Length: 158
Image (cartoon, rainbow, N blue to C red):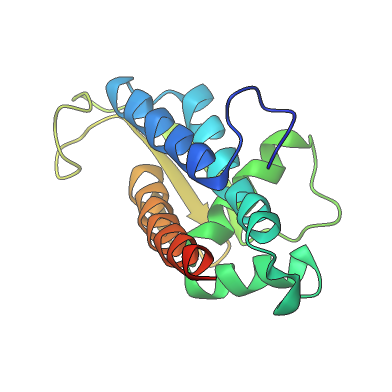
């Protein structure tokens, strides 16, 4: 249980914070401020889950677990890159797979889907491919929801 986050005490609470933040993000016009908060929360769920469900048995170090979850959910690599890239002015110890992020201002707002020229937050990967933040974050939300359900069920049975 976390003691330094007010009434957010468990990984489930932290996950619910992520969902609420994503809902706020979707209501905004692609707010970079809220997007950064979402990316940080998504990435740091790995820390919360690792400690809450005693993952040391399978992964001796937090970094081992984080590498594992990034291998399963590739979008977590992006959240890791954004979380660390926004927290630190320059990444010197972590080699990102994300090359750049940018806000693309379009003619249409977020009430339109991505087939329209709408405002969006773009992610440019080192390989040159371009991704949309909303989609990548949603993949991590689905992943963490499934992981939490699995770990909570196992935890209750033990």
